[in-house]
Image (cartoon, rainbow, N blue to C red; front, top):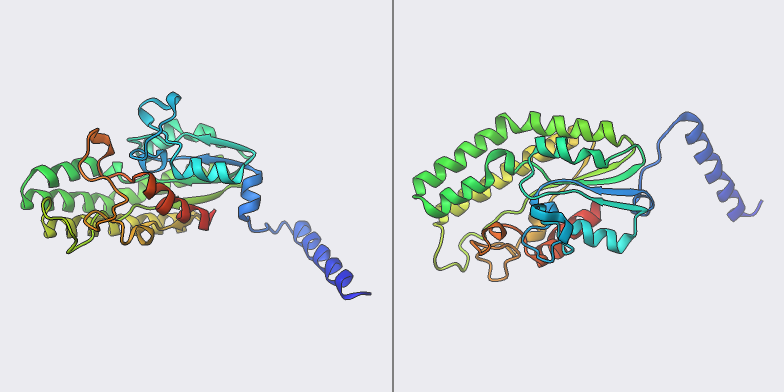
Length: 267
């Protein structure tokens, strides 16, 4: 038998045996593009700060510059359901977004957790209040991340798995906000910036662990944003901005240069 025919026959036999034994074949990006893709999560997935919001998305502010929209446009999945929404928590994702999932869903992306621990309030305290008040607010958020967030994430991930048992689920984290010893002349003190960055690392660590426990893929964006934090001189994040909801969210460049590559590498 010619070598090429031998290997083709062998591959067919291996796949047939795997199917007979019920062994699942790993999903690839091309496989994911064939099935339906559902984008869940909070403002970091909806694309707040990136502009060009879909007119029917209201206060959810779903952007055509967001990583889910950009990935879907480039990969043409059989269906694309974009339900990520600004302000979403783990519980609101579970109660208002999971209806988009089904047994035919093959790819899911999700960001969640920041709003559960009062992300917006922490940044408000750090911008408007003293260093002591900022550090106290950060420490309170870190305590919530370590003590209450794991079970909330675990519950959400269990629900996602139940609704979309065949899906490849990619969980994305959050960037560090500041380049320490950076080029910012005014604004938050170095101690405030360091505490905020550390809180982001703790948050990402908890998300990573819970994603692994659920059998999901975690994809970090922190490395993608390195060199593009606030005070870097080439920030992919808004500082305090008008409109205020843009503040501390990725710009269009942060979505396309930070989140999109992180998702693409794991999808």
